[in-house]
Structures are given as structure tokens and as C-alpha cells.
Length: 306
Length: 328
Image (cartoon, rainbow over all chains, first blue to last red; front, side, top):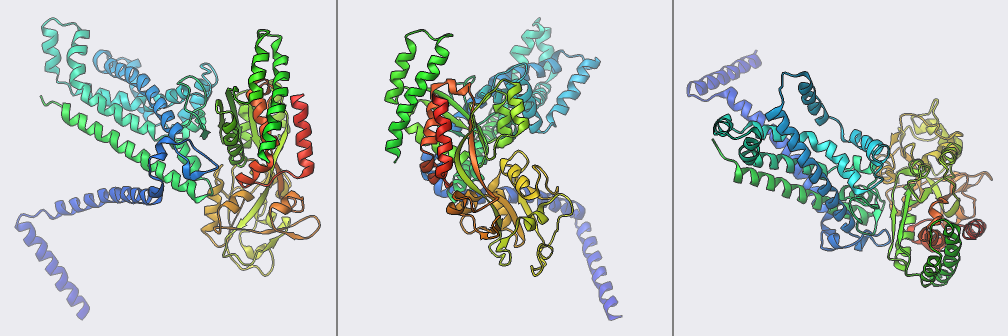
């Protein structure tokens, strides 16, 4: 009896409080929604912060210059470094860049400026690009092994085979981002250009592309950051775990990449190697943050409002 | 020890070089070139080129130590070591993609058949010993010594037990959590063959840690009732995180895995030899010949440094004979 009386009073009070709040113009549901959203975003941020803190604590003892200048060593983990892996990553990423950008941007230009989207084959291409973006990276690894390393291309286990495999993986990202950027160019610009007698190609190359460049660059850098963090497909297409020499070139000889090196050292039983792996992870995360910051900076610096 | 071997390696290397170059000299090498290269081989400096190695993740640390020591003598030879697993390594090897394959078990018939189909011929050389340890949690104070049948009761494909109480009367009712390498691993093939009587026969619901042997160490360290089969070297390198159990051998004694028991063969049936398989095509390259020789002649020092168990004198004899045959 007493209990229910209390409950009733509490409910009434709460109701009155809510009503008075609403009467005073405070949107309770809105505030609640905001709180839920804040909670959601903080979960993501806390996870990232935990990961960063863990990696930094674990890798701190080995975070020094020798990490960048030394060859890996199984005999002496304390002087072991990532040099060949860092250079290998650089080679692979250069390969990804020079193949992805021309192909991806051209595809985006075709789809946005030339393609007639009422034609079935253009729609098929679009659907396929969307699908490709959702394919797990290991599938591209298997594809790369069967068609690029072996099979028709037969490049062998070389850095460029890794580049091409990663290119297949990130191409959809670049195409989609570039299309968005091109679509964001106001049509008045195109009409004005065409109206002044410029050809379609002149309009695209001199008006549309320069204006959409920041968007394209941002998309490209984000795609590169996805590629640089990949391990599984590169393991399949031959990134080796132990090389004590720099790669000979894109088309020749064994190579390693940072992620594969981290992966290999993280599964060694010796504590020193796991510290080394954590230190390598810090380098990789720092590299990613740097690339993403450049992307944001480019977007802010060059984006123009119309 | 190494110094003597170095000299021996250089001498035999030169001989091997002359042999291998003579073998291919008739086809496309100009007449004056072999001599020049042979002289370079004698000084031990002028070797260059690449040695592509892939295979067992168990053998990899050993081969990497060999590659590092070899690199000190021949800085221009580019030795790369991958870890595709014994099976994965043979797949590449029999496809002609590697010079040397590492294996933690002898080559299987079907792998040998694939190699033959593709025209890849090879030699088999023992390079070290390794014990396969059954690791348990340090808090596990009941399972000090297990028979192969008892281990098999946990791992067999049909009707395996899930509690330690069912392994032997008197064991506590602690749930068993199992960790082990995946089917690309030579360790997997060896364990299933020796313990369950058939290569590849294993219960389906154990935690497959792929080629990540250390993952099994972490798994076992995390649960009192956990157990795993992993290379002994990994148990030893990981300190006090896990402990190995003693195994009842064919003489009925409880034997703990150690350097001595693995070397003298009393730690059976879970002691094993590790191998490298150089291909004949690879052995046409003087740098591959030099590396293989270096590896065999310095096996004791390499194994010791990598935490493995050296070949015993009988095994060493076999390896040296095989080597002598290879280099003529």
C-alpha cells in the first residue's frame, strides 16, 4: 500500500517534471536521442583509444630510430628493424597509386560524364562496382594468386603483383569517391563551358576535373590507407616474412610489407618480438593518421563552395 | 666450431659450384665463365643471386638464423624465408616457385606425386630435431604424464571426451579446451598421424590457430583445463606461460621433452626431425648450393641458436652423406 503510494508520487513527479520541461521548451526526446548518439560515438572512440594506448605501452621500449634503419633479425630481436618492410610497403603503395588513380578516375569520369545510365550495360557496371566494394579482401588475394601471380599474367611473387591485387580491392572506393566529387561540380559550370563552345573533353579536363580534384584526392588517400593496412591478400600473393635486403624493384624478387612483418613477429614466442610487433603497429597507425590528416587538410584547403 | 665449418663450407661450396656449373655449362654458359665464378666461390665473397625458401612456420626461425649467418659470409645473396606451412610450402615448391621447401615432416606421397608431375625433383636433408610438446596450463597439477591413448581420447575425431575427469579416473572435472595448428601445418600432420593414427584425423571443434603457434601458447595460458600441441621450441621460448607434459614412450617410461630425450630418441613418438628440400633446379644455382651446404655443415650451431635440437650423430651422418651426393 505504502509502496504503491510512493511509486505513484514518484511517477507523478516525474511526469510533472517532464511536462514542465516540455513547457519550458526543452525537447526531452531530442535530448535523449542526442545522449544515445553521444554514447554510440564514445564507444568507437574509447575502443580506438584503448587500442592506441595498449599498442603504445606495449611497443614503447622499441620505438626508436633503429626500427626504421635496421634489417629484421631472428638472432637478435633487440637490433631488429622494419627497414625492408617499410621500403616494401612503399614499393607496393606506389604500384597501387599509379594503377588505381588513372583507372579509377577515368572510370568515374566515364560513368558520370559520358555513360548513359538508361543503358543496361552501364547499370550493370554500376551495380558491379558497388558489389566489388563489399568483397572481402582475402577473395582479392585468391584472385591475385590465381590470375596475377600465376595463371595468365604470371608475374610471380613480386611487389607489383601485390600492388595489382590491392588495386582491385581499392578501385571501387576510388571510383565511388571520384564520382561523388564529379557529381558535386555544379552543372552551371558545365553548361557555361559548353555554351562558350568548349568540347566535352575540354569541359571535363579544364573545368570539371580541377574543381573535383580535392574530392578525388581525398577518396584516393582514404583508399590508400585501406590498402596499406591489408595483410591477408598480400600474404597470399607472396609478401614474405623474412627478407634482409631491400626489394630489387616492382617486378623482381622477394619483398615484405609492414603488416606482414608485424603479423609474423606477433606470433613469435619471445617477448622481444611481440614488443617489436607493437612498435611496428605504432608506426603503421601513425602513418594512417598522417595520411588521413592530409586527406582532411586537402579537402578543407581546396574545397570551394558554389 | 663455425670457423672450421666455414672453411669446409667454402671448399665444398667451390666443388659443388664447379659441379653444378659444369652441368649447365654445356647449354648456355660461355666457356670461360665457370672458372671465373668458381674462383669467386672460393673466396666466398662473389656469390650473388637469390635463394627463395618457403614452408613450415616451425622450421622458419631455424632457417632464418641460418640465412642470417650465411648472409654474414655472402652479403650479396638474397635469401628470403616465407611461412606458408609445410603443406603450403610444398604446393609452391612443386609448382617450381621456390628453391628450397622447409618441412616439419617428410614429404607426403601425394605431394611427391605433384612434384613429379610438374617435373620437380629434389633432395631431402634433415637439419634439426624438434619435440612436439603437449602443453598444459601451469595451474594444471594433475596431468603430469599422459599416455598417447589418453591424449588421443581428447583429440580423436569420433567420441572425444570434454572433461579431464573422463581422460583418467581421479582427474578433476575440469573442461578441456583444445588449441592446435591448422591443416596446412606439418605439426598438425605429424600430431594427428602419431596420436590419432591417421594423418589429418582430428576432432572438428578444437581451436584452430592456423600457423600461429604462439596463439596456442596464449590460449593454453588463458584456461586451467586447456591443452595444445605445439613445437617444443615454442614452449621453451615462452617461459612459464605453459608447461609440457611427460609422454609415456614405447618402453613404458614417462619422458619429459628435452634436448637430450629428443636427440636420443627416448621422447617418442612425439620427437621428430625437421627437413629442408632443395629442388634440383634450385641446386643449379651456386648460391643455393652454398646455402644448403652451409645449413647442413653448421646445423648444430644454427639449431642451438634458434632454440632447436641438433641432429644426433646418426642423423648428421645421413645428412652429410646426402649432401656429399648432391655436391658430387
